[in-house]
Amino acid sequence: MIELTRLNDRKFTLNSDLIETIEEVPDTSITLTTGKKIMVKESRVEVKKLVTEYKKEIFTQNKM
Image 1 (cartoon, rainbow, N blue to C red):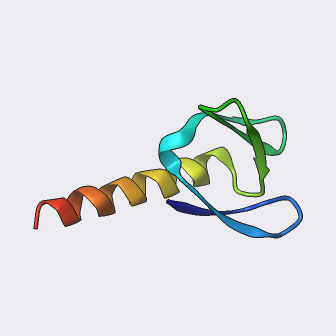
Image 2 (image 1 turned 90 degrees about the vertical axis):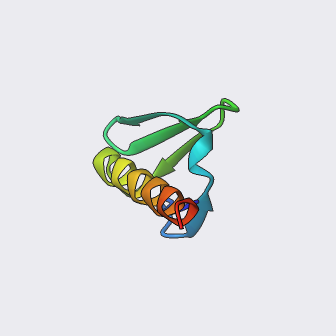
Image 3 (image 1 turned 180 degrees about the vertical axis):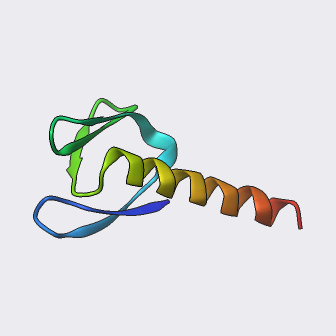
């Protein structure tokens, strides 16, 4: 799960496994596997970094 910010400054947590695509048009639009689209303040690169960090955290915990 990653924490993101909607365009109205409200924070929310997203299950990163549901992300299908991330586009900057110019705001960042995340399309979920359900077809739902979410606009966020974070850049495409920032979202990718958050997902990568989250996945590393999960896989590191499983190796212990």
